[in-house]
Length: 233
Image 1 (cartoon, rainbow, N blue to C red):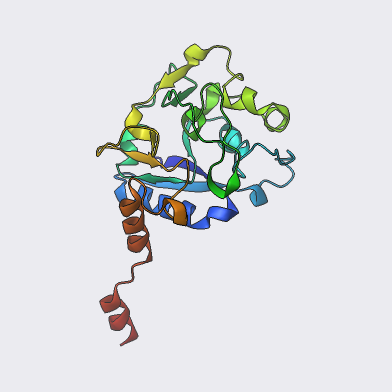
Image 2: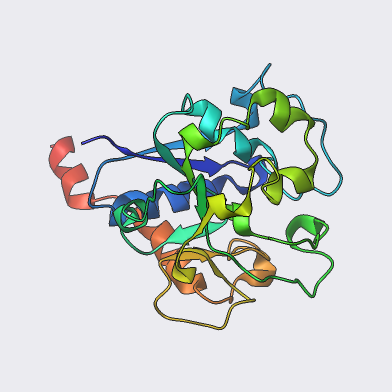
């Protein structure tokens, strides 16, 4: 059984978000999972874009290197770090469909605010947040070379202009990218996206699914004191 390959966007300003998300994936998974950060410090010489004043995270564009990181073979999942997985990632993995190059939740998302977490500009464009969770058929994403990712515009990347046709974009169930603060509240979300700001920011500490995030963090930090005492003795 090959591991489910998951790439998570890494932003040094949200270290804790990456760790809690990874923990939630592993804790709920019924199959082996391989998780790697898309981390700029590990992409030296490959990722060479200057910082764009409109990008809200360090992985805004580097996410599109996921197929290259996989050698354009097999499938992979990319997701932003400001998320929490409450379901078995194997259920998402089971939705892979060879007809498509990429599968996403096709949000109709028009933010009302102009600023989001850490003072980032809230940009508005067609297909917004489609690329925040991507199930990628890497062999059909060969247009995403490092050269293209380094030179394409943000809209070319996030609006999937690198595909020949939008028919190559498959649709995932909405529960696999529930937008907190935008989508109507629900109790059956499989993946929660704190797109405006995560519970680890004071101003969003009481947002929907905040309690679940803090519970996951507690589980991640927990130490079995009895096992520790037995080892010490």
